[in-house]
Every structure is written in C-alpha cells, then in structure tokens.
Length: 114
Length: 111
Image (cartoon, rainbow over all chains, first blue to last red; front, side, top):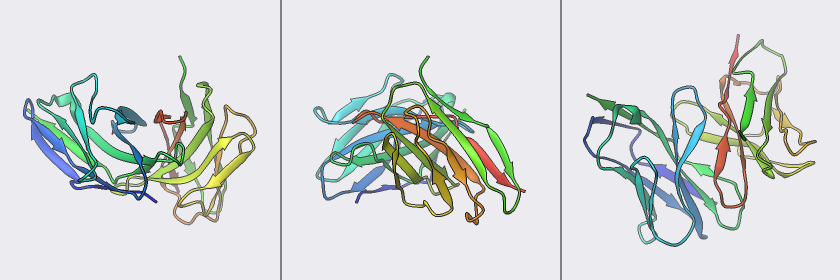
C-alpha cells in the first residue's frame, strides 16, 4: 500500500514570493506521482505528473515538481505566485502495478495575499 | 468538449433516506472512481470500477453502493446505513497512467 504525507496544512505567502509545498510518500513498489489543484467548491484539476523519465516536471502555469526517489519526495514549487494561485493543492501517488488507484495526501491550503 | 458531469451540485438528505449521486463521463475512460472529501482529510476512496459490470470497494465503502451498467455512468447511492454522510463527493475517471479527470462535485448535507 502507498501513503502520502503533505507536511504543511496551510501555507500563507505574499504575491510574487516563491512557494514550496512539501510532499513525501511511502511505497514498497514503483510509483507514479501527481499534483492536483482545487479551487473552492470545484473538482480537482491535474497540475503535473511524474510517470517516468526526467525527474523534474513542469506545468504550463509556472509550477514545477521534482521526484526524489532516495528521499521519497515530490515537492511542488513556484518561483513567483499570483493571487489566483490561492487554492488547495493535493499530492497523490499510485503504484505502477495498481492501475489508476490514487492515494491522496490531506492537502495544503495556499493563501496568497497582496 | 469531453468531461465528467456530476449532478446535482447540492443535495439535501433527510435522516434514514437513500440518495443517489449521478456521474456521467464522455471521455471513453475505462475506470471510474468515487471519493469523499472532508475538511483536513483529503480524499478517501469509496468505490472504483475498472470495467463495466465490475467494481471494488475502496477504503470507506460501508454505507455506500454503486453500479456500473454502462461505461459512461457510475452512480453512487448513499444509504441510510451511512451514519455521517455530510461531505463533498467527487467522481473521477482515468486511463492507464494518465491521472484522473474529476467532476465538479456534489455537496451532500443531512438535514
């Protein structure tokens, strides 16, 4: 079985400052890793994913995450946030041999203030 | 445009009543899922289905039931046996290795 720990439940940050959301996972088998974003009263949207290959993955809106196998981490970063980045962010993991079944972290609420 | 439609957006249930949440997708995805979201607890898997006419229990299946008679549809029934049903319910679908596409959710409240 897999588990995901998001180390921060809430991260306040000023506009145009950098942000890092921490995610650690545990698994006895190879995994796929995902970050999702949720705006209030909406479903989750896929932000980025790591399936294989380069350990650094990027999204179209400036977020990036790096898969670190030795530290079992998949931290999410953005060098400069906007007010519109205020949302809840979820890290998720699935075993490569259990097709589709995702295990989610508890979420990190990002609040961006001017 | 392809996507997942959940209905209704808001639902109120009386004590002892069964209610059914609808989930329809036109993405031609094989797998579909139901998650429950409570504040501070992330998403917990209720049921999932990887093919038509087959489904498996997730981590918190007690008090819920599902059916998968068509590839496009995966309705969730919250039965009277579910003692604390007030939550935000999310449906999702996926293809192998591709991550999920989520619906916009149904907020269920017991009155």
